[in-house]
Amino acid sequence: MTSWAIFASTLGFLLVAKPVQSTSITCLPAYSWMDNSLGQNPCLMATLAQDACGGLNVNILPLGSTPAEAHGFEYQGPLPASISTCMCSTVTYSLYQACGICQNGSSATWTQWISNCTDVTIGISTFPEPIPENSAFPAWAYLNVTAAGFNAAAAQADTAAPESTAIPTSTSTSSASATSSTSTSGPSAAGNPSTASHKSSNTGAIAGGVIGGLAFVAALAGLTFYLLRRQAQSHTVPSDTYYGAVPQKAAQDMSENSFAQQPQPVYRPYNPSDPSTFPESAPTPTVQTTSFPLAAQEQPGAYRGVAEV
Image (cartoon, rainbow, N blue to C red; front, side, top):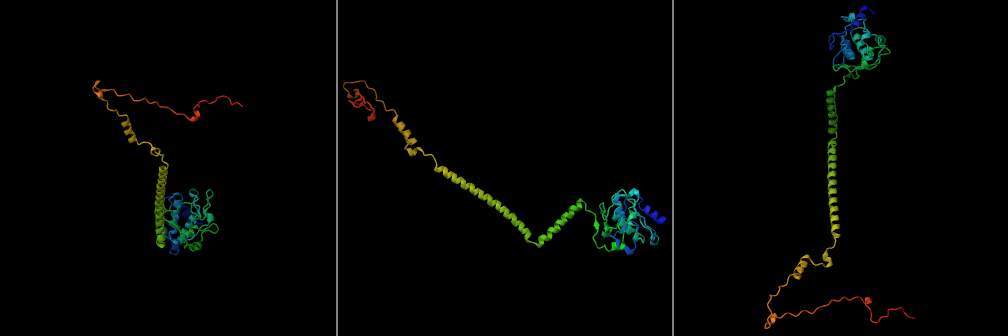
């Protein structure tokens, strides 16, 4: 490796003042297949991946000012001060090597890239950090390159595979979920018109069942009340009428008539010539007797002693 290659590899990890959102490196037209759906070349994707790995905000320098100058140079692995699982992953490695090749440079081996990654976990076919929201990584960046290193021909053969994009934020996720729900339920309702009506029918059936059940309970309660009332009337305690009792009004009239005071005769002095002044004869006294059963009466001349034999 020449001193310029070492110098370029070292300067590739120098810090800059602010996050890098662009690159000055231009790839050869023959390598436009390396660009992602956003039109970003592998050098810009490598820069954004490097920023996501640890917020280093570093800029990748070109291997040369012209393609001819870049020929024979390559990007080495991260320096000890910037190693991480993210920087020591095959995805970051592949993006860097694609950036070198598209400038007419060379590709470093996988072993060279991880020479300083002794104290971190190696990420194989994975990018351990969230993909930047303003970028997308092609599927060829996730190929397993641990055995033979980056292979441009194998990468080009994998360009039709879907690329990896950033995970939506909470707001974007909610919007995406709402859109997904709408798009999913929309065709279903249009393709199967009976779905909506079936749900409405189920709702109507449930409501009708509830109302019918309440009406049945009310009718049953009314019938029970009627039967209990009828049974209570049939078992009413007999009144005094059935025993020939005198009505209260009649008894009251009889009592008043029986105990009403008779008019008292006007007192007049005795006059022998006036028979009306003669005293009335006293009524014949009446003696009330009580008869007893014959068995209790004594027979005259009855014998009370012990029978003689």
